[in-house]
Length: 156
Image: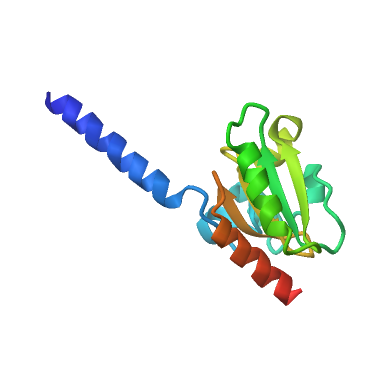
């Protein structure tokens, strides 16, 4: 009975944490949280490439030149990816100058590894220079996405 209670508490704690952080946008700039320019790198790569921001083009993802872009990583069997696409499209109706690129994770394994994509959908908001600025995993929160895209578009 005690073991069952412990398992139940762990499951509830995980569900609460996941609900709190799921779909939240977070900044990707700098070396915070082991990220370097929004891309994960191992120690040897970081030592060799200090100050270099790898481009998404290097990972096989083509972005519109000079445009802010929302990059959505989706999978064929992702149940919420179509809903996430709808949220992104609804937000971008107010920002016709911002592009939306959807990337199939099965077709871009190197990018998934390089960007440390662990689940779908994952959104990257990329600035006009091609640098990831914000990231969200899971169903994006429309208000946060709207705020981030609006702020970035106003700066451009």
